[in-house]
Structure formats: structure tokens, C-alpha cells
Image (cartoon, rainbow, N blue to C red; front, side):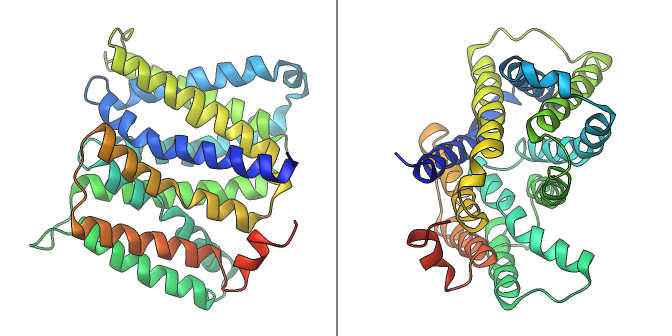
Length: 293
């Protein structure tokens, strides 16, 4: 098996894990506080990665600590907003709305660079907006507060993606991830302890959620991305990641018995197509499937 094929398969597996996290998070926050859950998730992920890459710890320096602290702010805010939102909205809707971060990245970059977005980005924004409206607006045009939180999370995660793209070129990506996870984990755990909301989980479904999100969706996926993304193009990577909301909807249907109405399906499809347009030009499909990187 070539490194290119291996990279595609591992990133696709990680994207499935990302999509599945929505149902586990929604299940977990019915038992534990948002801060408590995120504290356990990120501390465990950080410790596991530190043990796996323990030889790299000696390369830790002030620059990595500085950038890790800076990057942990939008990461923490994004996960807090997403986890709070999933208390009030469905896992499938949360997955589709979170997927909008792929559309927000080029839009935010256009603002930073002070130039108009390309035609495919503008089309993606229009499609995603219509899809979001179908997905989130009720018959009386009111927004679910959970959808608002998840929408905010998508914007914050887009900012985080941009920061990663710029800072990871300067520092070791794995060390950045380890320190970020530990910072977010300690902050959330400290806050939960201060509020009297921290306890040792005893419920099976809570440990299931913590272990799955920490080991598979965080430690595994970020390690795979940091190591294997160099073997495929950014276009191919973006297409793989765009399947996350689809996996979220499928998992929510089977795991939580969430029914997908026609309105949800159409809205989700519009967002999904918008995500693809944000990452693709019409000639790029040939690049992804036939042209070697």
C-alpha cells in the first residue's frame, strides 16, 4: 500500500471518528458539565500523545509554549461553544453546522487579505446560507439557541484552522498539539473543580464518550493529520474532512435514533455541497483522483 493511499484511508477513518463525536458528546453532557467533560477529554488526549512522543518533549521551548497558549484560546472557545450547543440541538444538525468552518476559512482569509473571495467561495457561501436556514430556522423563523452556539463554534474553529496553518510551519506540530490539549484540559478541569462540578465518572456511557473523543477523535486524528497530511494535497484533505457532517448524521440516526426530516436532509445537502464548492474548482476533481501529488 502506497503512503498516499494509506494517508487517505487513515484521514478518512479519523474523519469518521470526528463525525461520531457529536453523538457521544451529546450523550455525555447529559451526565457531566461541559467543562468537566472537556477537561477529561483534553487531559487524557494530551497525556496519551505526550507518552507516545515522549522523545520529542526535550525539544520543548519558549516559542512552542507561547504559540500553544495562543492557539489554545480559539480551540477552547470553539469546543466550549460546540459542546454547549449540543445540549440544545441535535447531533446531526450540530455536525452539519460545524462543517461550515470549511467555508468560513476562505471567507475570513479574504477579509484578512483584503480581497474579494473567488467565485466558488461566494457560491459556497450562498449554498451554505440557504442550507443553514433550512436546517436551523423553525416555521416562525426562530433560531434554536443550540444552533447559535454551534454556529459560533464553526467560526472559532475556522480561526483556529488559520492559526494552525501559519504557526505549525514555525514549530513542531505534535508538540503544539500536546501543549494545547494539556492547557485546555487543565483550564476546564480547574473551572469544573472551582464550580464543584468535577467528579470521577462511574457511568459506562460517560467513560465511553471520554475515551472515544480523547483517544480516537483527538489524540489519534491529530497525530494522523500531523504526520500523513504531507503525503496528499490540501484539496484531497479538504474533501476528506468535508464528509464529517455526513458521518455525524448517519451516526446520530443509528445511535440516537434521530429522525432526519426532508427539511434536515435538504439543508444538510446544501451545506455539504457548499463545503465541496469551497474547497474545489471544477477542474480539481481530476487532480484528486488521477493526478499524483
